[in-house]
Image: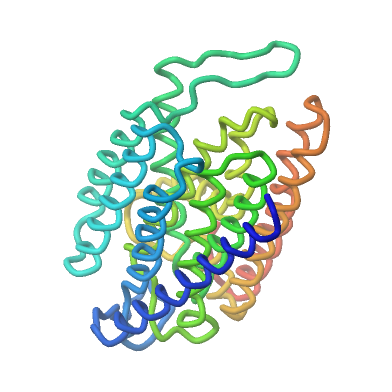
Length: 350
C-alpha cells in the first residue's frame, strides 16, 4: 500500500470517527437510560446505546466500501451476508436496550444472524496443518463457526460491565487486525477492522474514564459479532497457517474471562444463564481494584495478544501452536491476583 493510499484511509476513518462521536452525542440526549441494580457497577442512571454511533459509522463505511472499493470486497454473497447479519444483530440488540428482552430472545436472534452469515458460505472450511496439509472440515466447520460466532458475540457483551473495558479491547483488537490484514493482502478484513476501529474511537471518549454513556447491547454485541466474523474471514489468509487463531488471540482476555467464569459456575452447580457478578473483572473491581485499572489490564491483554499475533505470523509453522498459547500466560497471573484480592476482601467467588 502506498503512503498516499494509507493517508486517505486514515482520513476516511477519521471522518467516520467524528460521525460516530456526533451520533453518540445525540444518543446521550435521547436518554435511553441504564438504571443501576445489584449486578451493575454504576450507581446512578446513565444513558446507554452509545454503540449506535459505532454501528452507523461501520455500516456507512461499508456502504462506501461496497460502492467504491471493489478490490477490497470478499465474494459478493459473503459481503452481503456479513453486512446483513451484522445489521440484524445491531437492530435486535438496540430493541433489547429499549425493551430489556430475556436472554433466550437475544440468543435466538444471534443464532439466526450466525446462520445467515454461515449460510452464505463464510465459515471455516479447512485447517492447514503442518506436515499434514489441508484438513477439510465440511459441515463440522460450519457448526464450529456458528459456535464461535455466538461465543465471541456474547463474550464481548458479558465483559461490557466497566467503563471503557469492552470498547477499548475491541478498539485495540481492530487496530491490530487491520495492520495484520494489510500485511496479508486481506483487504476486506483490513477495511472492516479499520471502520470498526473508527467507530469505537468516536465512542470511547464518552465512556472512559468517566461514562457519559454506555455502549449498550447494541454496541457490545455488534462489536463482538463483527470481530468474530472477521476472525472467520482471516482464517483464509493463505500466507499464515492456523490464521483462524488470530482473532481469538486478540480477544484472549475476554474469551478467557467468560470461559473461566462459565466453567467455575458450572462446577459449583450454579445456573450459568442466571444473572451474576462473578466474572473475573467484576470480582477484581468488587475487591477494590479501581475500575480504570481493571479496564487498563484488559487493554494490556489485548495489546499483548496483538504482539503475540505478530510473532505468530513470523515464526515457522511448527512453533505456531506454542505461540498461540502465549496470550494465556498473563491470564494465569490475573486469576491468581484476582483470587488473592477476593480472599482479602472476603468475597467467596471460588
